[in-house]
Image 1 (cartoon, rainbow, N blue to C red):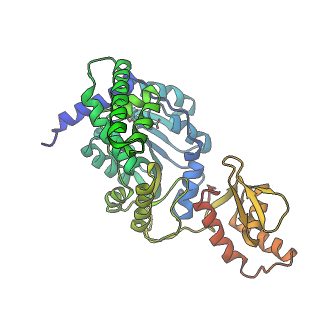
Image 2 (tube, protein in one colour):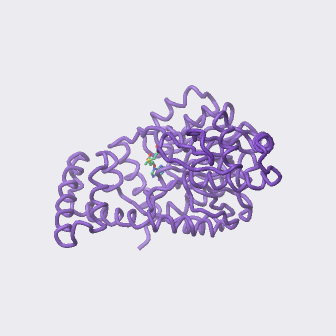
Length: 398
Ligand SMILES: C[S@@+](CC[C@H](N)C(=O)[O-])C[C@H]1O[C@@H](n2cnc3c(N)ncnc32)[C@H](O)[C@@H]1O
């Protein structure tokens, strides 16, 4: 039977209350800073039309992401909303130095509407959607669609794939097995004991390569506070990209791509991109930071758009074809003429298309290499390297 509105609000208060009891104040993730989220969106023709843009964080927690957004955007509005009293208090303190342009609303999502919040260029919705009840999820997706300006961009994080579905099942078992009246620390200790017993039993029955064993290992490795929120929380619903594209697409907001490596190939239709994202999640899966935008869904990525291309690859040796190494991962790639010329230029400094394309053509001509079709090849190479997460599109104001 569906919850009444007051039962739903009680559940929401209970969920937010867990963040008062066991605070969650994560270290920031620079990879989801506005310059990268908007850089990806710019590839698809979405994003703000000026250097100043308005940011909304739905479920801002302690404002970790809003503070990063403020650093990259000198004058736009910064609105955070959350229901946890303690998270809102810390968020308010952290945002105080941004003056009147920043505001933290301590409210239940169900009590927010687009008319009061206004319209935004960028919405963050990180670590939230999958911990809320389905009726709240529907409200949130409607709110996101209604609060985005035309061309506005939203970053949503969610779990999907076989591993996440098994984690959701494990959570059901642990919640039932543990006495919820204990204090959170004792609940976690007790749940860890149950989890280890289950792991031993599953290994005895199903063998030591049973797929559930990696889920037990994952759970046991979680730090106590994450263990509490993820494995003993009120709700944990893995969500597919297709489901989100279905729900948001009806409201004019479409899936673009995720932060990080994506499936190869660049279909123009959002539903095909969503299908490819789900396929990746079925193969490996996990946690996704996905970028959606209120924009024309039939527009493919364009390396010539409003982005500056940034590379961390460094040339190794002097051999031909050129070899480049990614220092963080140690991964090496061999690059042919056009991409080698581009990567050499980008190793010195990030460059937009308008500077990169002529410089590549010039470099190839100086080496006596064929340069006539270089810009076309460059388009393909930049997008392929981006999809392998070897190049990053960084937003710059139009
Ligand atoms: C995992 S935390 C994520 C916080 C933040 N986005 C971050 O990444 O640091 C989830 C947040 O959602 C908030 N939340 C959950 N249900 C809510 C509701 N119905 N209304 C407002 N906030 C809610 C919780 O209070 C909590 O701060």
